[in-house]
Length: 74
Image (cartoon, rainbow, N blue to C red; front, side):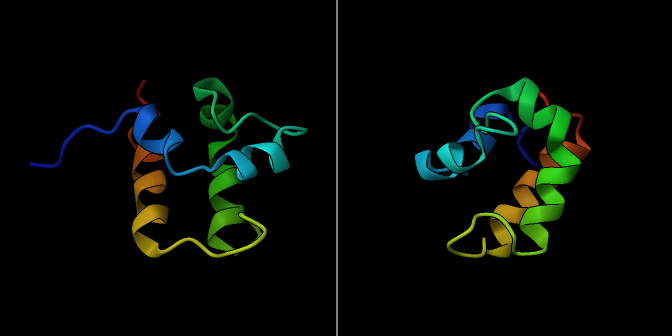
């Protein structure tokens, strides 16, 4: 049985640098912001547009994808 993801699991994916780069659009360390912009954030990560310096490994992408699919639990 898979454990339930929380926003803390998702927040840990984003570095302080990532947060600083995107703060103009949303706060990557704020559950409501990430939940509200989740599909757009996921799309940019899947396309390699985010983060700007390196692509995420598939395990990290899948964790974010799963959290969004589960409704973005706290």
